[in-house]
Image (cartoon, rainbow, N blue to C red; front, top):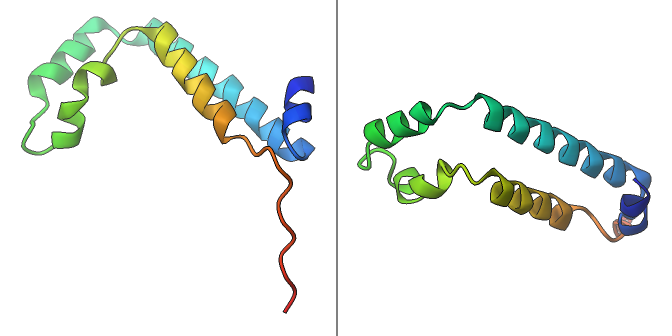
Length: 93
C-alpha cells in the first residue's frame, strides 16, 4: 500500500488498485490450479473460426499455460492503468 500511496493521487485509487492486484492474483492462481489441459484442447478443436475470428486469431496466446508471463503482463497492465495524477477540477458554469 505504501508504494501505491506514493504513486496514486489519493487513497481511494491506491486501495482499488491494491484490490485489483489481489483479486487478479487469486483468479490467476485459481485458473492455474483448476484448468485442465483438456479444456484448452477442446477449445482448440471446437472454436469455429467463422463465428469467432478474433478469438481464433489469438487462440494459442489465449490458452497459453505460461502463467508466469500472463501474471507479469496482467500486473503491468493493472499498474499502468492506476491513476497517478489528481483529477482536474471541473469548471463551474
